[in-house]
Each structure stands twice: as structure tokens, then as C-alpha cells.
Amino acid sequence: MRSYGELVEKTEKLNKKISDMVLQEECLRTGIPAEQLLKKMKNHYAVMRESVESGMTGEWRSLSGLVGGEAVLLEKYRESGKSILGNPVNKAAARAMAVAEVNAGMGRIVAAPTAGSCGVLPAVLLTVQEMSDATEEDAVQTLFTSAGLGMVIAERASVSGAEGGCQAEIGSAAAMAAAAAVELCGGSPDQTAQAAALALKSFLGLVCDPVAGLVEVPCVKRNAMAAVIALTAAEMALAGIKSAIPLDQVIDAMASIGREMSCSLKETSRGGLAVTPAAQKYKDHLAR
Amino acid sequence: MKTDYPKLLLKEGEPVKVGSVFDLLGPVMVGPSSSHTAGAVRLGLMAAKILGAKVKQARIQLHGSFAETGKGHGTHLALTAGLLGMKPDDRRIREASQIALEAGLETVFENVNLGDVHPNSVRFLLTGWGGEKAEINGSSLGGGKILITGVNGFEVEFTGEYPALIAIYMDYPGMIAEITKLLAGKGINIAQMKVSREGKGQNALAVIETDEPITDILSSEMKKMPMIEQVMFIDPS
Image (cartoon, rainbow over the protein chains, first blue to last red):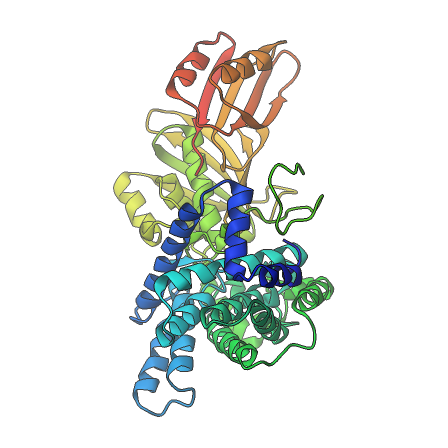
């Protein structure tokens, strides 16, 4: 799949959902029956749910000790009644961070599309499913929309931080979550594209500069930020707001930015946050 | 690319970089890193399968990024977990050191330079409980995908995604034909194959990846072939 725009066009002509098309294409390409693919995706969604619940216990700490146990602070703050974000957005942010904390602590997650960006999709989908009258089956189905978009991004650009910087990981995760959220809320195929474009544009140029080379700082908290942007992008698209630049072109822009990005800012920890005095201090501490 | 199925979205001749939706959503894995953790588990698992016995001692040499950032990514735990037979989604990976201790598996880690190889590379020097020995080189390519690049000093290339047959034999004309005939006779289709040898008429190693699982009958028939020194069957992991 190379063009999400063409996918939208074909989907609207057939009066279907993006997820229907992606599922059908996957059946044809792999020869695996739809029920089996749906079953596997259902298992993925179950692992996503588990990772959210496990993360919200607040018990996970990373091996380095740099991150962990903080997602639950957002929940406590919400319970205090003083939340600025309000229920759904606070929940999504906390959940995204919780899953990323599970990942950093060597717990079980679903890479979506990568391990470093694993919190965004489960946080957004679980929260939107909870708020809408969508069923678990609906949510599982929309994961195919996310995956279809991810395939287009992987074809036209990349979902790897080493190749394209953080924009390729967390940006892709946010776009995939935004598209799925729109479909889950009954939005049109074109609206899924608008949401994804709006989300991805917010991450263009974002570099991958992890402290001490670990999937911890800034990755864990960035998952929370991406969940909020994904929800905002979905809401904008559902409200009829369009991206001036079509999604495929946004993805191409991401690819070219990724190529122009210095290697020191693509997962090598030789630039950006990774070389700040504070990061050096952590690094020295870990080496001991 | 063959057009043997109706295409909805793919165009003729379009290169396919991504094989499946589950390459984008998945794998289900224990964190924190698909390359440094999930891939590392798979490398350990493949290494133990190639040894073909329960591992007693493992000298594990880490190269590049595995050496530099492995500790914080749990790469040591992941490689150990794989040697113990765990899969990338096993919740016990975090406790792999303790489990290894209980199982009597001794591990020694060293940081080395393996030369011009992928940044996430490792060499295993393994000894089994029955005195078996094996040396395995491999790399973690990202997204949990791996490549085994060396077995007992032979250059190989296989991914562990297909059932694989590894045969070490004395190089002589017609040997490959005999092996492939045997496979064809059992209705097993070859997906990929690579042969390397020390020299003409010397030891050779063939790696044959197949679409169908390799059966026990085939295994015993192959072991009976006169020029075969060693044959291993590796399930996909």
C-alpha cells in the first residue's frame, strides 16, 4: 500500500470502512482467513488493555530507575477534581504513559508501531471506546485502520527512530491512533486521513535523542503528549476541520525531513537531550 | 511480483517493504526495545536451538550498540532468557538471571568488536550439558527481526521465520541434489537456500529454509546419509 489517499477514494466508492479494506487486502495477500486475523488482533487488543491496567498500578520501574510510577500521579490529580484536561484527556495521557512505563520496566506490550511508542494507540482506543457506544469488536476492527496507515507510512517513509527520528515513531503512533479514533467515532474514511495528517504534522522534525540510549527519557512522557495530540486531531477532523496538506504529502515531507536529519539526532544519543549536562550525569551514574 | 491475487490497493511492480499488518501492530513483546530486547530474546532462542541441547555454559560477546546500551535495555537478560527457551513475550524475561542460576546455566558477557557487522550483533559460544559445542553469530535488525549470520565459523544467512535445516557435510558433487530430492519426496518446498564451504572437497554447510515443517522421518533419513556430519532442524521462533 503506497497511498492512503487512494485507499480513501476506493473505500468511499465502495461505501466501506478503511479497516474493511485493510482486512480484505491482508486476507488476499497472506491467504489467512479474516476470522483468524481478527482473532489475532483481538489478542493484541487484550494485551493492550492488560498493559494499561498493569501500568496504572504504578508499580513499574525501569531497569535504570530513571522512569516509572508516574502515570498514576496523573490519575490521582484527576481524582482531586482539579484536572485542567478533564476526564477523557487526562485518562488517555495517564494510560499512554502507563503503558510506556510497563515497556521501560520490561513488562509485556504490543509494539504500535514500535516499543518506544507503544502507549499511544492503547490509550486513545480504550479511552474513546469507553466514551462512545463502540464495542470491543469495533475497537479491534479499527486497529486494522491503524495498521493500514502504518503500512503506508512504512512504505513511503519509515517508522524507525534510527531512520527517521522520533517523528517516525511517535508521530506515526499518533497518526495511527487519530485515524482509528475517528473511525471508532463513526467518522468518514476521509476524516481518518484528515485526523492522521493533522496529528502527524504536529510531530514533523521531532528528533530521537534518548538519554543514555534508553527507551525512557523523553520517550515515556512523550507517549502521553502524543495521545493528547491524537485525540485533538481526531476531534478536529470529526468537527470537519481539514489539513491543508494531504496525508500522503505529509508522510513524504516526514520522509524527506528524516533524510535531512543529522545522524546525531537519530537514536544514536550523540545530540539533543542526550548530550545535556543532566543526561551526562544520569549516564555517568548508570555506568557506575 | 506475480499477480496471483486480485489487487485492491497494490500497484503492479510496486515493491513491498511491509509484509503484514502485524509488522505495524506487534509483536507482542516484553520491553523496552524491539531490537535490544525482543530481537535479543529471539537470537538467544535460535542459538540454543542450533546447539540442539540444553545450554550449560554460554560465553556471550556483545558488539556495537548491544555492548554500549545493552545493559539498560535488558539485552543481557533477553539473551539469557532466549537461551533458556523463552519467547519475546515471556513475562519472566526480567527474572532471567535468577532463572538461569536455578537452571544451572552459567553466562559470561564480554564486550567485543566483531568487525564490520550490524551495530546490534552478538556471538554465542555455547556448551551443552552433553558436551555439545556451538558458535553462533547473529544480528538484531529492528522490529524484533533477526538474522543468524554465522554457525560454527560458516557464514550463513537465515531469519528464523521459516523452518530451517542446517547440514554440515563433506563437499562432493551431487550432495545438494540428494538433500533437495529427499525434501521434494516429502512434499517440502524450499523457500531459501544458502551453501558455504571451507574449500573444494572440504567441509560444507547448507542452510535450507522451507515452507513446510520438517518431519521427524526426514530428520532420521538425513542423518543416515553417508557424507552428512551433522544435521540440525530449527523450528521457526
